[in-house]
Length: 285
Image (cartoon, rainbow, N blue to C red; front, side, top):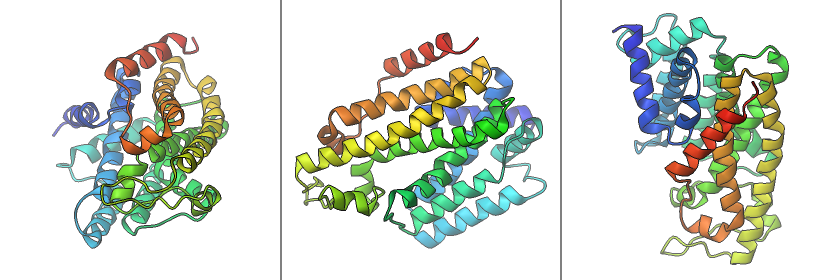
């Protein structure tokens, strides 16, 4: 298969699977769009293995296989995602070892890790999302890479914290609790559910917990958006679109935490398109 075919395959994955990130990726010029699509496609593969329905041992083996494939000097020519990713890594300074951090985070998920403190959760977020922020920065490029890298990491953490708050109910259904145990104790919550899947904690306690966690995420957004002036206009627009979509989602969660705990909130296609358009027109010229 040609490299062009490999990139087209990755772009199809983005269109089909990246419900939020695709709105930012499409704002990039074609070469960077293709490269970031390859990054996303391999990250998506890792996530899918970790979140799959296979037995835990089988998923751990799949993640080990992904790690081994990443380390191969020459990718399997039939693996279109890896063909595209290797080509992208030749063209851009993509920190490929960050994928190993993502794999580490997915391994923690498969093993059912829980988090006692906010520092514990932060480490996990840096593995599964800060890594993606740094991978994306490799494609975006910056004249101040040492300054930009921790900001890209912070933006990834902010997005992951938003994901966690959006998915509290869905995660609880499969036995996962990401919110730190010390925070649950602080607000008198256990996140136990009744036979209908509804949380049994007092709504007012859940509301305080969720708004506290949303405030923590906002701190990371404030830090992460300092990345935007360090990027070129189109890359800044891409990052701003992703950030805007997730910040809007976070605002909705914080505005009505009880509703967010009862259903999976999302933005409409129109809302996402509007955020992306504003990101492009508002990006630094």
